[in-house]
Image 1 (cartoon, rainbow, N blue to C red):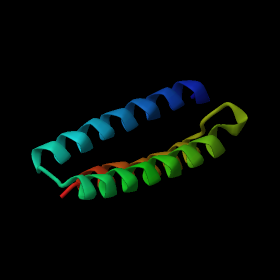
Image 2: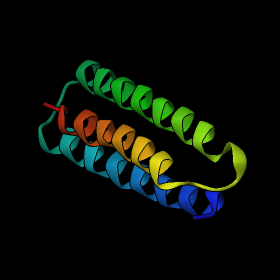
Image 3: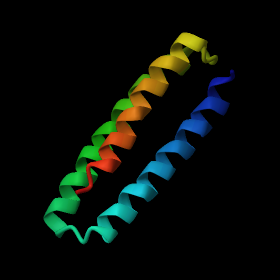
Length: 85
């Protein structure tokens, strides 16, 4: 798959996870301090995903093995968003 196309899909997934995290922060009425902590963990996860994606996309094509690595790293986004407790 072309790297640009896959990068766009990953960006959409990050956006969706960010929306879910913000919804959970509001729904659970977290304090501003706790919300800042949750957002910080989420942003650390996003930076890790971006790093793995940049490494995988360096040749312009995402192979199945590279896809697996990036997909595994995006799972941390869901976990980071779910920790908004």
